[in-house]
Image 1 (cartoon, rainbow, N blue to C red):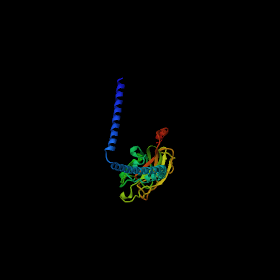
Image 2 (cartoon, helix red, strand yellow):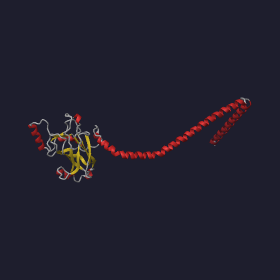
Image 3 (tube, helix red, strand yellow):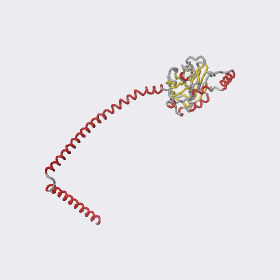
Length: 306
């Protein structure tokens, strides 16, 4: 009951306020008509008001016209966007192979090892298994040093100098130098890899002490081995290092294999004319790492054969 009473009071107060307001407005109109400004003044005010209203109407019309024009342009742009996106996708697909080739050919930059995975990196787990009959070249060798290197080659098949090709250093002299123009090295990779390419590095001529790199390897061959003494290795192809090209050169394998290999062999077949020795600064092996489950079965057999 109390709530209904308060609600009725509020309604009565609102009605009274409306009545008072309407009475005041009516009185102001009557006053303006009888005792207010003259008719000319009122007509002048109305003329000014009409002029302002006309100007506002014209401005609003112009704004509406510009809005319609902008809306039409936006619709045209929206209709053209799918075609532009499709053209951009086609251009990207067309440029992607060349961009990949360009990124691989432009390999004389310092962060090359951050762009392509190297599965022959010693610090990651790769190591030298064998150098075959290759003789290491020793500068200023004496009979004693010759005897020591011969003894090391007989006792230990892992040539200490060949480890340089698995390390990131590439300063002049920090290389694997072997006698003559032919040599080989067998490398155990950090895992089983489906090879897609290999990179060979040599110092550029302008930092070589003799200003020439005739000791750089020229023709070389890459093989994949099941085990160290595998008599039937897989031939990934033969390649030529260009001494006039980039210091680091990438070579895509010519005969890819769906099978992964954990051991690869590099055979250097010739150099660029040095009569005494050949220098190999670094070898990088690229590809896709094979999951361990697919190579577990023959792992013990490979260890026994080694």
